[in-house]
Image (cartoon, rainbow, N blue to C red; front, side, top):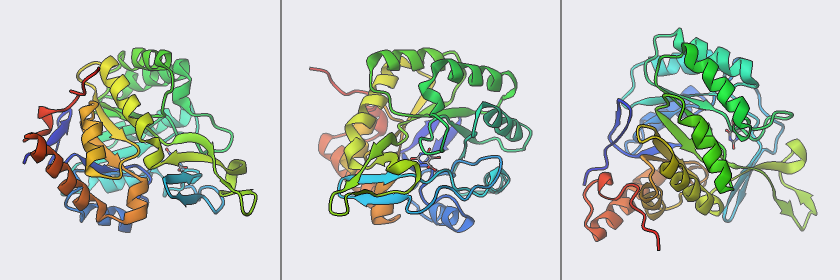
Length: 308
Ligand code: RRO
């Protein structure tokens, strides 16, 4: 069975990634990703210009059908992650960066451009949890403006991390913007922003920052994630790859993401629930469903979901 895949000139032995933010903040966590043989690549925590502690605790809450988080971008600051990705690794890296505003995002991309790093960078335009900062990619004009500036100087391979969209007009709108730029990939979806989980026994919300509003992930977001992968695959230029993120708990879910058009699939909440051993299970289950259907490579079914 061949599970190889690629994004631009970056070749991955396996289609599985960690979702940014999941076990990728510290050197020790990144080392544990590197040691996970079923992972095709390593994605860093979104790096900001300055190190950040993130939001007050509690900021992650486990649910039967997913999770809610209000982490608030805790990270060690971009120099650490930019240094990390410039070391030799056994698999490709994706350096995630997130500005607190447009100027920050542009400055971060300049730092990457000026470095010796030649791997993939991912500009996170969709963090839902920074107090007082809306998700950039819901504002198409602002997104176009940032990408126009970035592309005026950034000559390395990069993609963007998107929030989920919920209206066909919005899929049209964001795709029209993204197709103007030489992106390697889009990563869809970030968590479903500003959900609210209520503990009815305590009559209280479950996370501290922003009055309990936070990003939803895990099984409950799978249909939204598949819709975004499919809708963007139908609209984006063919040379823009898609990383499908959201709602994966089984190898069958990975299969569904790829069937909708994903080139790679990343996993967040389920890694928190189950640990890094999840990837061996996902690989086994993906290979089982592919074998049942007589498929030998991801190309055999990628993007081929049928309509009625
Ligand atoms: O750190 C976070 O709160 C966070 C980020 Br940057 C993100 O992109 N998505 C998310 O669910 N949480």
